[in-house]
Image (cartoon, rainbow, N blue to C red):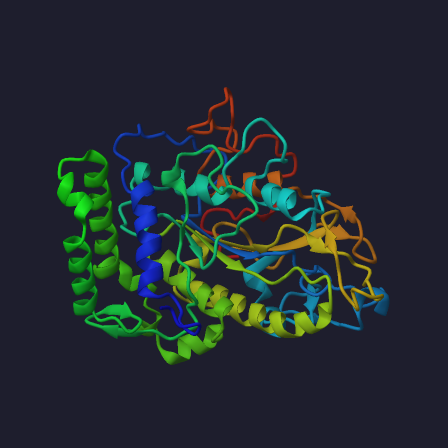
Amino acid sequence: MKNKNDGLTRRDFIRNSATYAMTAFFLSSIMPFKLRASTDVPKRAKAVIEIWLWGGPPHLETFDPKPDAGAEYNGNKKAIKTNVKEMKISEYMPKLAKIADKYSIIRSMTHGINGHETATYIMQTGRKAGGRLVYPSVGAVVGMLKGYDHGYKKQIPPYVVLTRPKGRFSEIGFLPHRYMPFVTGGDPARTPFTVDGIVVRGLTRKRQEQRRKMLTNIDSMGKLLPDNKVLKKFDKDSDKAYGLILGDAGKVFDLSQESKATRKRYGMNRLGQACLQARRLIEDGVVYVTVNAQGWDTHKRHFSAMDRKMPELDQGLSALLTDLDERGLLDSTIVWCGGEFGRTPKIQTKAPWNGGRSHYGKCFSMLVAGGGFKGGKVIGASDENGENVAERPVTPVDFFASMYELLGIDPEGPMPNSPGKGAKIMPGAKNKLTELYKSPGAKK
């Protein structure tokens, strides 16, 4: 049985790998889709890390503080200076304040949707809910267009989610199941140990092989139907899954290979260690990684929750950006951090909320860095209380179209595998973030 203190157990990993293997490893029957690149945009990005703050982070306590709005809005929280002149962020983020030149802030994100499911859908796909087609998430699209059909040769799937599924919507939409993300499960903050280079949770390689042999011996169905095509395919997929776990590819998930200092730098918590795991995956060649950071739906006791969660975000995200930069990976890796919406600027003080913030899709903030995006910039602005977009509105379509362009993908190009005629990857952007695009060779 899995102990409640265990992290990514071998059982978790094998189950998740087998599930993915049965749907994702066989790609040879699909005709490759030729990418249409935007000719007027310098291609910079090779990969994406998405820090998804599941539930909706507050813009006033993150990237759009309002120190002059009054306690009923700001809860007496202050804004602090950063290493970029005239850019201020919340006092909750002193580490990120020191490296503001590495990222930019969008303070005028908007879609006007306050429901989790529909807001998540638009912030993951760029499409409004309710249409005839269910569109895939940006992670699935990038994994498809940068994956196995386009030169990706890693055994680790091209799209990985750490550590829990996002839920609330179908990540692949109308795409085939082979484009589902590989969701790891577990908690990377629980320090693993290694036997013969393999991460284990109380199971040695020998013990694992014995269990596999036992399963083979009791496989009466396989013995009765040795030529069954379905069972043969299942066995073949299982072999690939075991190969992933027991082979060299699985070592990328072994955080014990990192120094104690590096692990502490990110923070010994689920979010911090997931950020470290994301860096390892990108360094290994994975093209899209989502860190699904849950617990941001703070309807009640909002500030006590922020006292716990914001230091983890500040440490983990700042370490990730700095580490990527030091390793020469930030310029080719887009990092974006946000949620499905923001939180209501005016604090809900009465019972039963007792100082909470509700859903707010009218105006919210997002951080973006790397991969061809400039650092040290602020895009757009909200009004004095953070309730409305005051200038330069940015929609999810605008952001995703910009990201696709920097990945070398034409947002107006045809969407592969679409059941509808004329479906495009990300059409209709009106305010792409072109002022944030770096020129080739630019350092900032």
